Image (cartoon, rainbow, N blue to C red):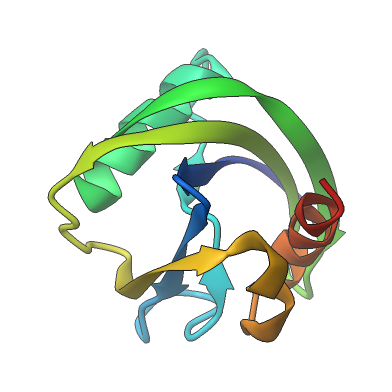
Length: 128
């Protein structure tokens, strides 16, 4: 089974964290996630995260530090999800791969229908 390397941002704006819901036409449709995307060949993780956030959300962030890496086996593929703590700067909130977004309290992340690979990240975040 192929492993897909994906980077995501735990994006803070004051005391809230940014979540996006995957569009109906995407895999894992309807699940909420920390936004990001696939790392392209030869690309640094941080560069990939900045690029993906800008492409998918028109968002700029300051990437602070690596937070957690999760390896999760889905039915058809394995994902290595690499999460970085980020500070929100600005966004146009154009949605290309998502149909909704929310700023939520990190203590309420367990109330959202998170994608399975994102759950361990949310659990670790709620303990910080």
